[in-house]
Image 1 (tube, rainbow over the protein chains, first blue to last red):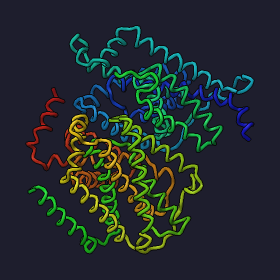
Image 2: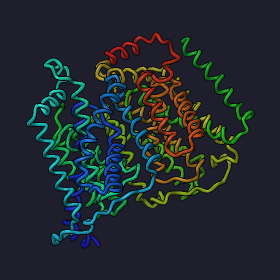
Image 3: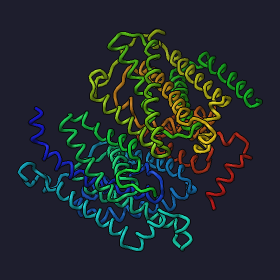
Image 4: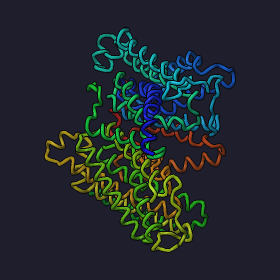
Length: 292
Length: 327
């Protein structure tokens, strides 16, 4: 039995990479928000779930392909994040970090139950015309949606990295992350940068939601599945690190699928929590973490 | 000392009233709600000791509850040990687990969000393990037999569980009152206010934090036995639910962290809100939306929790913090 598993190892690793790229995207938003605002957005999973529903309804009502919906959902998610922070979380918290954490927790309760009320608890999936077409790599069949999601995720990570390192906005965001007061003194509108960062973080979720939908399902609790995974990736990669999130995403994706292969569906999940705990205990700054 | 005496008098009167309450309340519905309020207040109080007094926010407090619940249920189911002995094992299991988790995390210097996250991870780990072991019944869960009797900590009427929960709550409040008046409690508060300074003053912060989490663990363990003997069913999503981890910190924060009555007030208010909205709005989800909104409002406008309303508004510290926020 074990040898049979081993022969499937390359397939498991490939599948892990495919999911890992999307996990990275989910974690990217979390790590960005943490890096700048120094808070954990507990509504992250709930907002991912909203993005999944947005993509679902665009497909269901207007027949828009989820991969094209990225062009609508991502900007909409940015606006949503910006507004929620600027006139919601930021104002209500009075700028106190602990309050932001608790308010995002309250927000997640509202969003999750709002979804339950409006969309019911049923699981929804989409089926695309090319859902079942696949490429044969010799050791694994990869469906088109998985391949598209993988490369699209990589592309978005790259774009975000370019935004953060090559543009004035990126420089301003990094300045605020490093030195709030200093940034304020040189004339950066810190509150605005906070809201923009929050918006970008949620925009990543918008994109991630569109890419997850064709290979996953959505219900009001879907987000929870990804929250622990995203936290793990963020901690593993180093809070606030973009490269860390991508690498962390791959490691977790592979851990999950190889763990599932070797230990079985239910115990396979143990790898994620174990990595989480070990990293926290042994190297809490993560692989690429710098003390921001 | 004056405050201590008035707190004790208040407690004595309160518990005397609650002890006789079942004579006047015959409705099973109200008794069940009160039982639930006591239970949540109790579990919130366990979080309060580590979170409110020692300032260490855990997001996986449910792990002690779940482990205690499994410990006593497995003893009952697989070894025929009566729950009244099982609860002792559950308390020990909770404390030992807490020592392990606490020692590993605190020794590595994990604070703030990092401590919150590692507790979350431990709870997840235990959920996955419970889901795949045979002795826990795996994903199917454990069913307990209904055999009312004190030795099984099961009761024929809701009044029995009412008293069970009331006793748990009384014990937890006694622990916190002791904490408020003990050197140990003062050291926890010192750690909360400034850990480095506390360390510099010669407080063994690692030891104190481990002791605080062990008290939390022991209390959580007993809560687990209470739950499993009352509802007679246990599975991994119940035993290690993120929801309960969140609920224990919410009732405490809403009521008032680091206070004797905070968790009780928080539990009372949140459960009342929940019941009332559920009565008026009979649609899944909607009542919890109201719950979420109230939560955000309390966090935004009452930085010291509801108890801050009663304790002299002259609380300068809170006023100053509020002012800072508005500026």
